[in-house]
Image 1 (cartoon, one colour):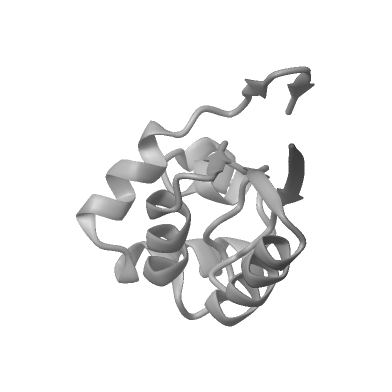
Image 2 (cartoon, rainbow, N blue to C red):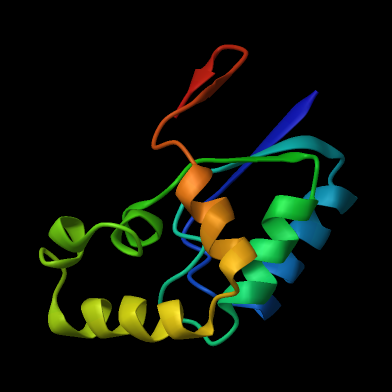
Length: 114
């Protein structure tokens, strides 16, 4: 089976769709998402929905996903990144916030640890 690794989607739905379509065309069966589904981009809900509804994607939380829920992590971000997370919180649905809260910060599939 082919594996794909993605990360740093940062709310860019257009880009993640292009990447996922490419991976599908290449015959990738499982996708490991190393986090940062949300962040700077304008479509955080669409990105979370795409990732959580795709059964071939296994996701962990990145620092931006964690900062959404942890003020201590957020306090270590620069002002631009901090503001991006704060504005993203206002856009996210409660269901998508719950999904991000449930993500672990590390995981493994087969022989892969991430």
